[in-house]
Image (cartoon, rainbow, N blue to C red; front, side, top):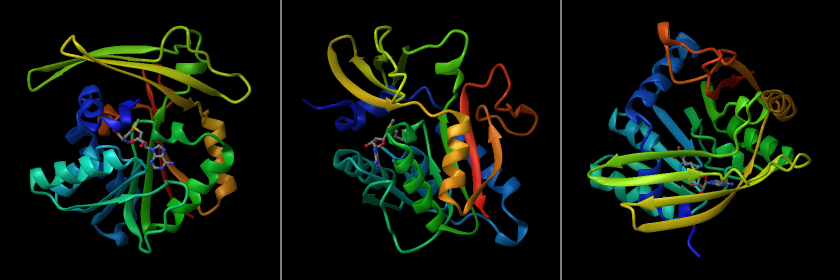
Length: 261
Ligand SMILES: C[S@@+](CC[C@H](N)C(=O)[O-])C[C@H]1O[C@@H](n2cnc3c(N)ncnc32)[C@H](O)[C@@H]1O
């Protein structure tokens, strides 16, 4: 059975609720805020567990030298093909975000949309952060977007979300997690049942294992990994006057900016 990550076009359609150019703009704004002036402008970016690599492609369009890395061959092929179609240069690497060794460093490394929920153990998260630290240039930043811990630990925890999107006249109705899905209280892993219905008739069903990470576990992983420290924390992709602190009641993402220490 093919899963949702084996159908990158459908995955990208399902995630098209995001404003990728706006998010890419905020990533660059945070770089301007958190990188030392001596580091100069951001020239190189590495997107990890990139899937269709929408952010890497957008940053490439803005003139950065961009690399995208993902484990799934279908995602890698799709990202490369979409970059070619758009006329932007994108290097695509099929590899594991806990083991990669590209032999060079980047001004910016990003992991978007909770892809770190595919790191199932603390050891895996620490290995991931050590690989990131080894790929950051002096003054480089790692920006990691995760789901907000309130999703699972709030007064009204939710295991399921649903939304509908439309792009280029094609509609997708998405259910990510069902009310019957349960987070194992010991492993903090849930098997999220995913259903994507395209134009009312084509249905993709999948079960995607999801590891829930708290903010304090992330801090512990950062400390264990060594080499990285927290430069900033945000609850959404607002910047400047629209900045959303992680603790804000309206925060719905956990975005952490890390820098080499
Ligand atoms: C939820 S998708 C997110 C894709 C992308 N970050 C985005 O913003 O759309 C998760 C991606 O992580 C990839 N992935 C899962 N485990 C991985 C690993 N160990 N190393 C690299 N990629 C991985 C999957 O193949 C999938 O493309």
